[in-house]
Figure 1 (tube, one colour):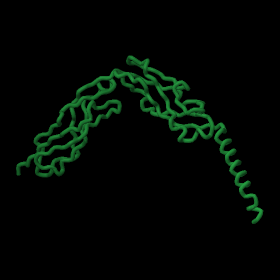
Figure 2 (cartoon, helix red, strand yellow; figure 1 turned 120 degrees about the vertical axis):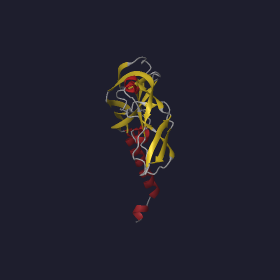
Figure 3 (tube, one colour; figure 1 turned 90 degrees about the horizontal axis):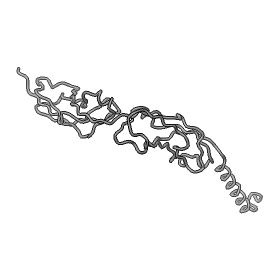
Length: 217
């Protein structure tokens, strides 16, 4: 027991120095890793829309650097930055991904990018007014019938790439349940656009007014 406690402070100091040297060596050891990073777009043209490869929100980077820099917190700021400044008209454009548009923490080096390029198609942004098509998931209660139904507003404005907007003739309302409706009723619903590249100019809810009356016996 005496041998364990003899010169205890020197032993603890030696242990602390050994741990500090190990931690310093580990932090400086050159390692590699692969990680997904987000794509950030800069200077997006205000009158154009991207249609191809927009779903590629992340790319994968293989990087190397000191072990202490490759922890998740150290790599949290990594990103791909695509500058759209030179895009000023509709058409196709391929962007190559390299160290020039990869943002990495200090001391971390890029090995490769997967995919190494992103192909984008740009179309003119257009606005179009289309009618709202009402949907009902149940009919009126027994003994009642629908006399009238209409949406307010009856039409909405949609925005997106020209080819996709032109292909849309109407938007659908959320389905409405009439099974417990008697007389006049109003429902607040949203419009549903099937194409993910097209959006509503305004996301305000739609008022659906329905009038029911009793059927003749």
